[in-house]
Image: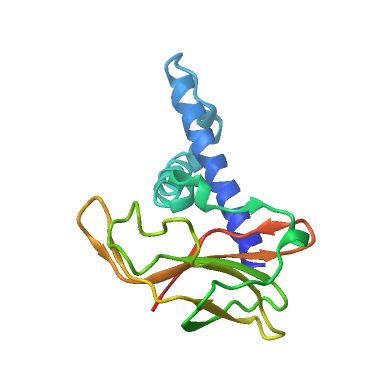
Length: 174
């Protein structure tokens, strides 16, 4: 439900941005759609500016591969990494959903080598309360190109719905 609301907000933000861009493009020819709605001109422009700002700060607009995706759920079978030593409990509020997850290895702090062959990954299913246990081997944090250290964490996507949607990439720090 929350993702549907987020999608609708995203849709309206994009609409305001497109409208503002169209208005700006037409102004080159001394034409203004908003001249017909003078009392609303300033509020609409303010709303378009706020929309552009909110659109610009949304992670999935700049990194779309981290957003939702389609994936056939019927091939997602529960599995865990060999020699899993840690159990992390997450709560999703979505009962009986598939969780696809992956963590870094504990061998390097280099971001480009941290996930290696993605062998520290698994699939699990949430219980009736939407809670899941992610079983992983010990992982480590890593240093990103900017020099910032990112503490250890696990990434995951929630598979839900009959339309085979995997949700956006989420991160659980521990």
